[in-house]
Length: 221
Image 1 (cartoon, rainbow, N blue to C red):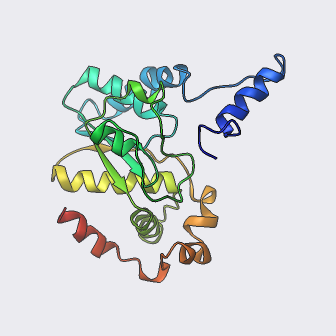
Image 2 (tube, one colour):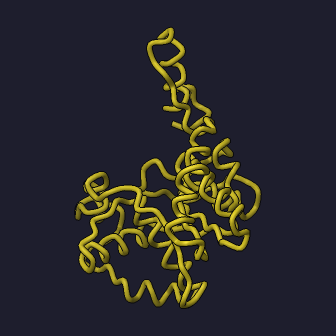
C-alpha cells in the first residue's frame, strides 16, 4: 500500500513496537541516522583505504539511503571530485527528485527494497552528483551476462548497481576506477530474476537477452 496508508509496512512496524511496551525495538532504518553514521565511519573509510585514495566514482542504489548517504559524505570529505552516482530503478522517485526536486515515478521494477518515494533522513545526507534510471530489462540482461561469463549469480540490487557502474564507466572513459556494491546474492531474487515464467510475465524473454546490443545502446546515450 502507499506510504500514506496507515497499513504501510513502515507504520505497521512502528505501531508494533509501540504496542509491545518495550518488548520490541524498531530500528527505523530510514530515519535513524545511526545507519548513515555506520557507513560514514566504516564503509567509506574502508573504500578509501582499499583504493588508496585513487577513486573516480562511487555508484550505489538507495534502499534506506544509509549506504549511499554515509559513503558519499565521507568520500567527499577526502576528495570532492569523486563522482557519486545514484542507481535508481523504475518506480522509484529518487531519480526525478534529483532532476527536478519532485518525487515522481513511472513504471515499476522487480527489485525489492530499493527506491524511495520521499526524502528520508539518511538519504538527505547523500552527496549525489548524478543519477541513472535503470530498467528491469537492463538489470536482467546484465545479471544473466555476469552469471554466464563470470559465474557470479547476483541479486537484483547488485545487478542494478552493475548496470549503473558500466554506464558510468562508458561515460567517464578508460583508466577510471569505479566502486559499487555487490549487496545481494542471486538466491534472494531467484524466483524473479532467474525464473523464465516470471520474466516472460514481465515481457522479458530470457532467450533474447543481448548484452552486446545493450552495451552499444549505452555507448550511444
